Length: 634
Image 1: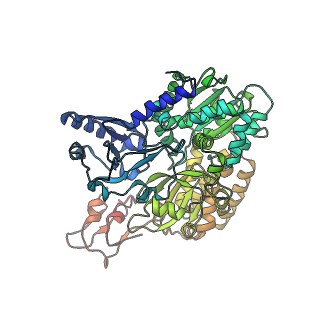
Image 2: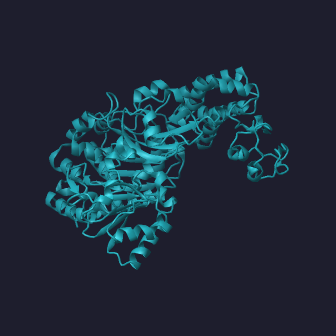
Image 3: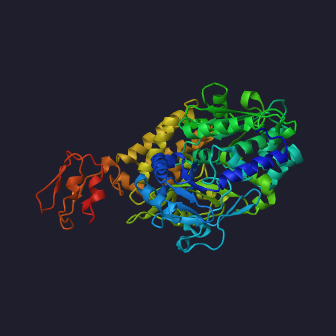
């Protein structure tokens, strides 16, 4: 139905609440890319088959990611009158036992993770109680959502609906208070009042630079010219990052609503959502969200009877990392090669088609409906003095629990690693951590008390970037890590400007010298001089920040570079410097290394320590991985 008034929006909201809380059993399965990769599609088919066989009156609904990547596939079940229960991981083989427990009116305690007694719609404060009467005894030993360790230190604003709503249902989004902020904006607030509210919230752009969102909007609105544009950047390409993709897959309407509000405030009638290649699921879900919003009259002419006209076009990019840069992204939208241009004129003044343009990323736009709905003062009470609100963080690397979380700004990285990531795997010790992707820094483990704060991170030599946190253990080599990022940026450089095109290539060559054991003090000086030239002369941030990982690896781990100068790789990673041997005094002659070697380079008689033929050895490290007594030496 078309929505023109508050009463009509309320009518759709009630329908959404009915879908969210049906009178029969509801089974929700996470279907973001990470969930599907773990087999969620097969679990859905198994659930459909088992429910049909048992004639269970239920609804099976796809939802987004609840962040517990290490527990996927995840399934949540609502049985009217009982707590909502999350289960995981659930395999197709687990489904019969799970459905049997549900059909009997109980709970599968073997796979239960946590329970939810009450649900709060963040935007309007409405509470829904799942429990009618006392909590049944079978549920009491299952931790409540707020007490489940993974969620204790989280505060979900952007991800508030992820895992709760069907991302392809506009009714369920409205049922959770969606589009109420848009209604408030176009019927009760002037464009300047919206900008003032966003400015008072003190939210900074979540794209890495941390520039004031309100000031950015104001600059675009006040720029000379007629037509202006608002743009959403879904082009994160940092290794180990996936927040934008997950948010778009889990709750596309919150991004779309934020963009529409931004268009109203800035005075734009056209918005663009630029989705990088490879985000096929996120692309299809945001396209469907746009279609649904158009059908409901929340996009197009005379939105909510306010006289405000606004349309959105979704554009799939080519996948280049550099297209995350604002001017390169705009070039791509114009049908040109995605290359940056000099910014002597800001895009707020002269951007897309030489018109005033405002670009924010997915996470920034997702915050807007909540800031408008809850108020700037509410938002500004979260975080630190200079960094307000929350941040979505993807935790990866050497951690027990790779996951996606949202925490208040000011949270210490040690809490992110230990409480949310579960710490490091057994027998691993933290050596460093990396944030900000290729433009960020490598920070030593002793600085793990560093806070999630723009200024504090900048002083330490890193930045937020898109929000990745990569844990690095002592088995990693800092020279090899620096080489990896330099190679990544060499491949991703658009090649338009010499400082970046040739600088990154030369940077990678210099690091290679150390990996080969032929680096010298003169090469260290060259790296510093090259970095200075790239920072000062590159067209865009790809070239200007390309040396960051290398520079901070040198700053904090210079001894490793010096060891490589002596022909040693302390971590035993750089192949040119590795010679494997077996400590005969330690070896138990278990034969595990013989079985693990993919090229039969290890041989020996049963009951005797084996030997390694270095002419055959490909230095893959498989023998070290399986040796339980650490007898393989490098």
